[in-house]
Image (cartoon, rainbow, N blue to C red; front, side):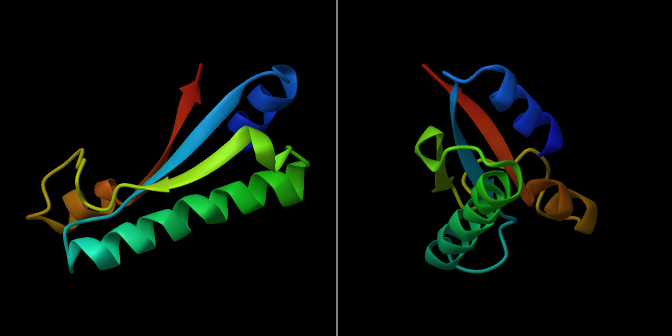
Length: 89
């Protein structure tokens, strides 16, 4: 988040969507809500701690729909719990 804050400060016209992800434990509805809250926490950090304008950042939740690792192992589930920044045009 610190690197993203520095990037946003250095590029005042840049906009990003923060997309939260979860592992596959639980329902899609619950995980989508959790992933959105996870992304919103990152938005709150960037706006509150670094003064980034909230209009430049959105929070989205993908739940468990885009895993980067297997959900069959603890290590894979941990890797799937993340927030990714997507640079918007």
